[in-house]
Image 1 (tube, rainbow, N blue to C red):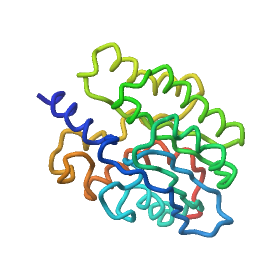
Image 2 (image 1 turned 30 degrees about the vertical axis):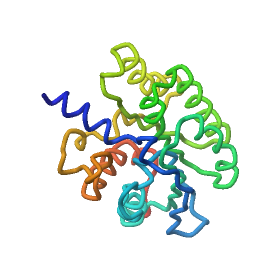
Image 3 (image 1 turned 180 degrees about the vertical axis):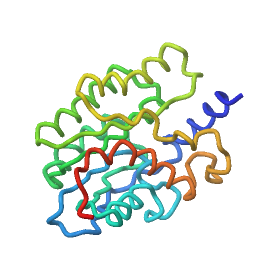
Image 4 (image 1 turned 180 degrees about the horizontal axis):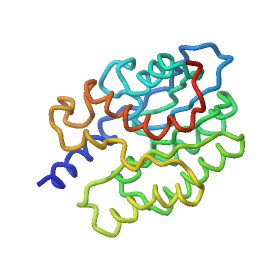
Length: 220
């Protein structure tokens, strides 16, 4: 039963290309530009789809960094409906513009929902990781999941993509962004597709547990 609920919510937690209209990436630079940048590069899960942008986990991340004395500015370059191919296409210009110190990559859900080849998704993610590392940015990989009705082989290959890439490139990995949120209807928007504002702090906690060791010492 739990796995069934999880599968249902995974469908809701990722982006549906039919319902998520693309949005232009927007900066969330609340600190001075002299501070190093954390670039969040994802889809609707990171773009605060369906809620106020300041309620999303990325905005909450900026607030937590400030409150704990970490001198970083956060730039949210997430786009609802984004595939890994779309992300790869945008990435060179985004990296040149932002020159991030840390890149959080949260993409792949739309590839899975559309049944795109896992090998293609892996190549796109690999290219984004390598592009980020080429400019000396630290990379954190954020994984997502798809329901089992895509078939056991496809689902297994999709799920294994994130730990495989993390191992290959020696990256910090958050295996599942929606851990603790998936399967809980009260944390889902009325559209049945996206986490509500109340779920965003849990998403932030999931990210923070992996991200904080990458930050170095705070100023406190």
